[in-house]
Length: 94
Ligand code: FES
Image 1 (cartoon, rainbow, N blue to C red):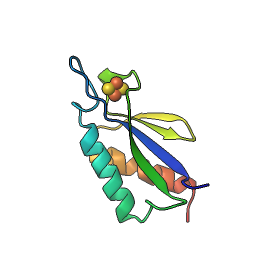
Image 2: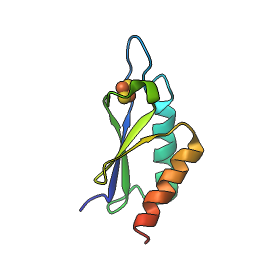
Image 3: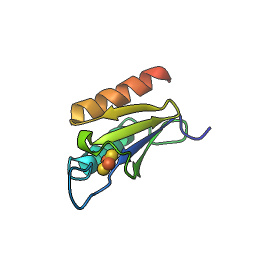
């Protein structure tokens, strides 16, 4: 096993209508990567955050999916991003 969790953050940008890029997906991605790095979780056995394409929930973004557990999240604030990392970390205390 390489990473315990993969976070796929939609960063899709649409020409018209709402999209995750427009709704703060790149700030979310940056916050998650910085927080994972700060906690030393961005290593094998930890949690990886990656960009993803559209999930078809464009009006509710920014959207994120956690694998392998398959949970869907709308993360709108840095506090929510940190809370998700807290939650995932608690599943596998080191
Ligand atoms: S643009 Fe993110 S779900 Fe469609």
